[in-house]
Image (cartoon, rainbow, N blue to C red; front, side):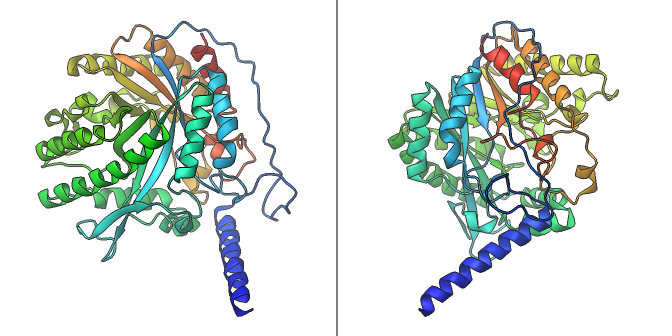
Length: 437
């Protein structure tokens, strides 16, 4: 009896924590048979058709879709949704778009034995858990099998990327109350990548290689087609130790190949490719990515030197996107690689110049002041597709991000409608028109 009471109290405490977090973030659940919280307006999640006229031509590139980088329950912060429940429906819609590949994200975290000291070597990589932020978690073997079966049933290849954090993501829930997620994340990134020592770099690769071998065996057993070996979110930089990192990355790729027989994917830094450096990191000393099967560069917005001055000038933005794609194609040719371009513009006014924002930062005045602009996002996709015609050194276009449901719109909280997603927006029709050509 006492144990039952204990479990009930724990469940009530968890429920109360969730409600408090929803209130703090001004988050609302989707419409359903459950009560609507008093701070919420009604939500209407319908599949929308905009009837946009799209001029297309036939692309030579492989056509891929990147699912939103979340896995588990509560990805819209409403506590009633799960990625697992939307695998079949989402992959069916990806297939309808005309894609041949779909990418999902697995999650990993660094657990420190002596506190979150980024210089410490006393950490290990482990599964991400739902309970620190009531959201993202690692993909279980059971879910992995479901993903593979669903993708292959639709004739899609399945690729898996990796989100890695060296902090407890749950800390950002507190930051959201004050509207400072963006500042907190930026500070963590800056502090984390402060001059990693030779010892740290060697230790990191030893641990990351072990983690990649561990998951590679699972991916191979399940039938995954493509796996990344590059962490994103908190990506380590190796300034001052580029040659060492290059050697260890090559070893990592070679070791993964011994247990995983599919294609190996790596990230190529956007500024590293265009300018030869990423801050203090000298990318001219790195060539490990040539050992991989897929080399992808992520583009969320125009890099600094391509950014436009006249806000809203469509012709200027078109020229800037054309120039960027042209230079990416040229740089890929110089490096002797066939590049994959991931493109995920946000859908707020002038987002092509500034990129994604922290949509959970609902108390942040900057986020609150952004104006929805779905047509500009659709235009950005159109410009990229047109620019890819004849780009012989770009072999793949990977469009992102594709949410796991239709929970988009002006009345949805948090402001997912301004995010770097294109499902249920005019941009989806642009993607579909080009992919099915």
